[in-house]
Structures are given as C-alpha cells and as structure tokens.
Length: 327
Ligand code: ADP
Ligand code: MG
Image (cartoon, rainbow, N blue to C red):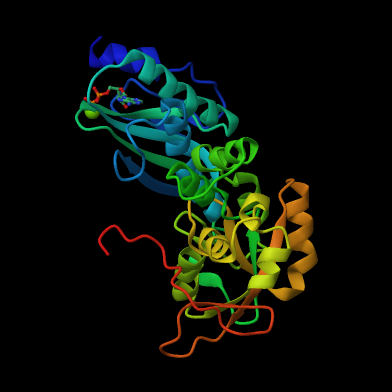
C-alpha cells in the first residue's frame, strides 16, 4: 500500500455539501467557506510517542484524543469547528493500527461536524499533528486576557479523573474495575466542551481549557489578564467539580489530581458576578454542569497567579504548576 492508497483508504470520506468545506482532500489546498463575516480560529496540537502517549496505546483512542485536544482549544475560544488537517508520521503501514486510528479520529470528527480536509503523510517515528479550523463572530472569541477583578471563576464538569487513571495505570493507586473504566475513559477519550464554549460567548470574560492542570491553565488566564485568582478548595471539592472516585482518595492525591492533574479538557472561565444566573442557565441548556470555584482579585507583585484557600481561609501549600517540556 503506497502513500496515496493509504490516504484514500483510511482518511478520505465523501464531503457533505453545506458544511463549510468547498474542497476537501486531494487537491493542493482545501477550500473552506466560513459563514459571512466570521473570524477564523486556528489551533495546532501535536502528540508525540513516548511523550504524550505510549506505543501500546489503543490506536482508536489515540485518533480520538489527537482530535479531541485540538477541538478543546476551539471550545476554549468559543469557536465552532469548520474542519481540520492531519500531519502524520508513521513508522510503517500497519493496517489494523491505521483502521483503528482512523475510526477514533473520524468518529469524533463526525460527532462535531469537523471534517478532515487535508494533511501530510510521511514515514518516520509515530507523530500526530492536527490543525483545527473554526469560526467565531468578530469580537466574541473567549480570550485569556479578558478577566476582570471581581469576576467569578468557574470550571465545567469534574476534574482529576484523567490523572487518577494515570496514577492507577502506573500502579500508584488501586481502583475498582468500574472506577478505573470511568477514569480511563476520561484520560483516553476526552470530550471537548464545544457546545459550552459557544454558549459562553458574550457571557464569559475569559476562558481556557484544562489541558495541563487547573492551576497552570487558570494561571495563564490570570497572567494574560494581569490579575490573580483565589480558589476555594471547599467549593471545588464540595460542588461537584471533583470526580467522585478522585474524592475517595487521600487528600494529597486528590489535590494533585484536581489542581495539577491535566488532561481533563474541561473549560475554566471567568464571568462578571451579575451574570451568575445567565452562566448557570447557559451551561444547563447545553447539559454541562459548571461549578463556581473562586474569584478574580488584584495581583500583588511576587504573588502567584493562582492561590487556593482551605475552608478556614488558609493558603494551601503545594506545587501545582503544569508540565513544561523544556522546564
Ligand atoms: P502535496 O504534494 O501537495 O503536499 P500530498 O501528496 O502530500 O500533496 O497529499 C495529497 C492530498 O492528500 C492533499 O490534498 C493532502 O491534503 C491530502 N493528505 C495527505 N496526507 C493526508 C492525511 N494524513 N490526512 C488527510 N489528507 C491528507
Ligand atoms: Mg504533502
């Protein structure tokens, strides 16, 4: 099987008219037609074997996750997907692997109406790089830089399960079979919060997705906005923002999973206090739970961008910074 046969067999799908794709795979470029007046939202994420996943990973979940982490960036911008490109380096043409990978990738693409419109395929150490294209009305993108002093801070869904699964797979924690299945699905098949991102346009003042960990990702938002975050551990732990199986673990591990876990691909966002009811109603409309976990304050020089307080108002002590590939 040559390069072009491989692309045709595994990645080319009939293009459905009217989804914003004028021309898909097969020409020198794809041609996309955003809705009139919309801004393009563009984001790239790369997954490297040994760094982001192990060679033993189920190819179907690798395909799913490679697109999911990219769609999550569109969600965090409040953008709707238009399509994506795939740059793939493969050590060989393992047909079972390719079939599984394409299935996971294209099922998620179909679910979010985000067709594969082009890419590049070469021989090399396994590497999956995806660029997603989306659209957002001008001025309505959910930037990291818009948080204001006094805003509330929210997180969607629940945090910590992906990291807990990783701890269990590494043998550091024992989980019951059902709990492991649930947490492992969070790690391997994250669900990008696209509908929530779109519904938060005009409501949220700033947003990011939790790919590296809550404290790290929210820290980027705070730094970009020139403000600080104060989180209430009790609000996180008590309000459904922590996965049930995570909450059952010892406190230190729970805090690590929730504050520094990463890989959850939830949205963390800020909004003015007068929009509290609207935020909850909007999240409700798209069937996603959101929890208010703290507030935005002025940030004094030398203070970390995110501080976490316990129930009695004492600062929690710990290092919850995210992963830095060159750190
Ligand atoms: P070019 O020589 O112009 O770079 P290629 O021969 O690399 O084109 O690719 C041929 C067509 O197949 C192009 O339309 C390209 O976008 C598409 N393509 C190549 N690899 C992939 C892939 N992994 N997934 C989707 N489309 C791909
Ligand atoms: Mg090429």
